[in-house]
Image (cartoon, rainbow, N blue to C red; front, side, top):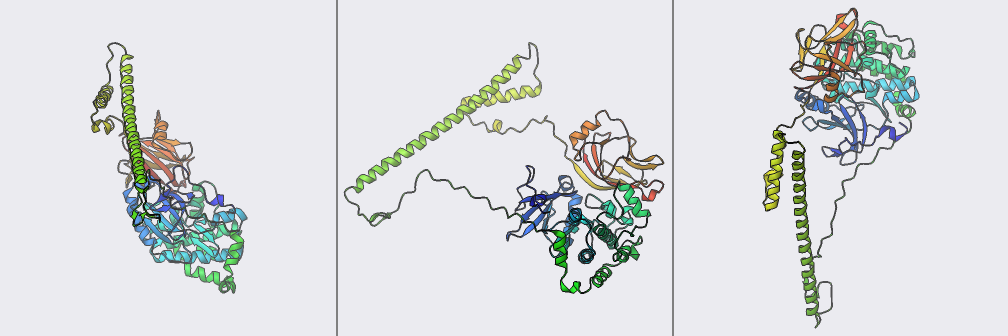
Length: 557
C-alpha cells in the first residue's frame, strides 16, 4: 500500500473506458462478482465502480435479486460503511458505485505489518459492529464479512460489499453472489447450509478480530473442507489471543447463534476497555500507525478534448459603411480592382476543390472496381484449380454469383445496395450463448438439472454429489464429467477440448478446492462449466457434507 502502483492498476485492453458516464481512472481489483474500478463523481469525489461479470449479467434472476439488494443497500447510512451512491441492475452490464475509501484492507495491513495492537483491535471491533448495526437495520445480512471486506481509513474501519449480500430471511442456498461465504470466516450454520441471520455476521466479526490480533485465521489455513470441519466440530483455540480480547471474541464465536454477543454489547464492551481514549478521539492516531503513509488517489480522467478543424475557405467579411469591416480607408479607385481580384481568387479555389473532389470520387470508384475484379479473378482461379469435373459447393457457388453480381453492378455504375450490405451466410456457424446459474447447492439428497439450471429435490437429475468411505465425488448416469487443471477461467472452447475423448461419468473431489472447475457434457450436446465455490466433505457426517458451485451452460454446444 505504500506504493500507489500496488493499489491503482492501469486499465487493460479489455477494460471499458467508462461505465454509465463514469470515466474509469484505474483498476482496483477483481472478485467473484466482477471487476472494480476507480472513478470520480462530477464533483471529483473518488468512487469505486463494481462491474458484474458477463455470466451473471446474462442471468435475469440474478439481475432481479441484485436490484432488490441495491435498493436495500442504498438505504444504509453509517459512519463505518462505504455508502452506495449509484447503481443500475438493468445496465449492460449491471454495476454498483460506492464511495472510495483511501486506505488498505485489514488483510493488506496485517500482511504488511503483522498482528495489530490490542487498542487497534478494540477500535476495529467497535467500528465494524456499528457498521453491521446500520446494515442489519435495513434488513441485510452481510454473509461475507472478512478482512478483505474491511478497509482501514484514516479515521476508522469501513465495511464494504454489503450491497451484494442476501436480504435477511433468505436462505443461503439462494445466494446472489458467487459464494456462500469465505470458508475461514464462516459461521457453523453457514458451513452446513443452515439459516443465515444477523448472528452469522457476529461470528464473522469474532473471526475477523481474531485474524487482526493473530495475523492469521483463527481456524487455520489449508483445504476448505478441513477448515469448515474444524469450524463445525471444534471449539476455537483462544489461548493464543491477547488475554484482554478473549472474553469478547469467545462470546462472538459461540456455536449457538442465540448465545452470541449482540452488536450493542460488542460496542459497549470495547468502549469500556478503551476507557478515556474512546471519548478523546484516540482512534485516528491508532489508524495512522496501522495504515501507513497515505496513497495519492489518481486525478479524475478529463473530458475528451473536442477536435476543431480549420475551414477550407475563410468566411467573407461583412461590409461596413467605410468599406471592409476593420478598415478605415475609404473605397477609392482601387476598390473595384481589388474586388475583381478577390472574386477571381475565390473562383479559382472553388474550381480546384471541385476538381479534387471529382478526382477523389473517380479514384474510389476505380479502387472498388479493381477490388471486385481481383475478387472475381480469384474465384475463377479457385474454380479452375479444382480440376475437371469438380463441382463447387453450394456456398461457393452463391459466393461466386454474388461476386459476379457485384462486379456487374460496378461495371454498369448502378447502386446495388443489396449486395453491399448483404448479411452473413445463414450457414455460418454461430457460437451458443451462455446462461449463468449461480450458487447451485448440492447435498447427498438432491441433484443438479443442467437443462433447467437448478437443483432437484431428488437424485434423478443430471449430476449428483456423493460421499462414501473412499471419498466424495460428482457423478452422473449419462453426462461426461472431467476436471480442468489449467489456470482458472475455462471457456466453451477449453471445455470442448477437455471433453474430447472423455468418457468418465464420475470424478472425485479429493483434489478440488474453491475455484476448481469441472466441464460436463450432457447427452443433448449441452456443455456445462461448474466452478466450485465451497466444498464441505466431512466424511461420515452427511449433514455437514455439501458442495456449492456456479454453473454456466452453453446449449447444444
